[in-house]
Image (cartoon, rainbow over all chains, first blue to last red):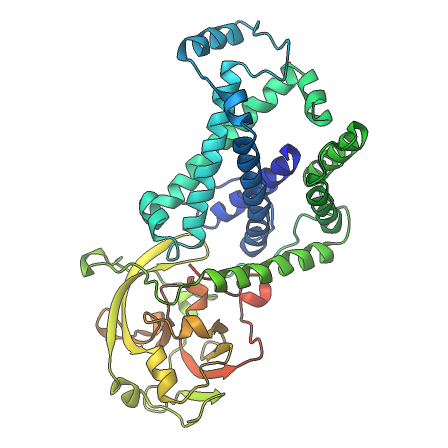
Length: 183
Length: 264
């Protein structure tokens, strides 16, 4: 589930950057070398193919985690006090990862954040794709133009998460073994 | 707009597809042996690595796979399309001024169509195939609306179009409303086509005016099809011929890879 999601995110992000470049509405363009699709039409095809992978995978993930109680068990409670303590420990470089199956407070918050951010990406993406057919979502996203901005900011937040996420894997490489082995 | 398709990043589409299929079939089997699990996951890791590596196998198979998904997306959009759901309308004060010009060519190549000799052709699955002059179209009941035009590039602009309800026009010419497609051929050599459900949507206009004035050449004189439920490239300008058909008629941008349904 994780790796399929990672694949979808990489495709969506790289093709999304090419789509963004069609207008560059925030005043800058993204280097063509790190985009996917070659031209706008190609990028859109990639984007609208990978969206199904992310959407279906994400729905299955949420359904499985809610139904099995894993969501509550692994990501809650999040206590601000414990979060502060873990954050300080992390910054000092001695946050323990004795049991990688147990998420510390920083991890819980980061993973919950990325779940919510992904929901935001899907909702704003639905508005961009079908703004007439989803009027309620459109109003929630401050209209079509609002959804463009939300979609971009949520993408940037996800990109920031990925950077930190990968940096953490580099710092604690054995988590990669657990991830690839699935336990 | 003169974007030309350029070579794309090649990815082994078949492998990616096969991988996705195998993952889905595996997902239903809990307790897969750890070794297989490991292999499976590292395979996907390989898939990820391919993305950064470029050029592996033939581009054609990737294109085919993506086009196939685009066709599925046409069907999904047709299913999502609610004939009774209206696109938002806006007050005149919100009209974008100046409204942007957009075509597959530059402003210096805008076609001028002669009004006096102009006749709109209507062919295909229609009872009445006679040609229409502009005064005849102007004599039909006119409506106008202020709606948002959304471009496939991402930008949007609000404009005011007026003209004949396209559903009304299709009924008037005795079009077979059970046909699948309506196609358009334009004086600027553009062509595109839409689904019958959208053609009959109450906001779909055979637009003859822009902002209360006869459509200027840059916005598609003598007429354009205006649909606030579809992206800009689905709204043809300088329409010369309309035909009703069951044969997939495609379109200028659609042939190059833009999604056919192009709905919003």
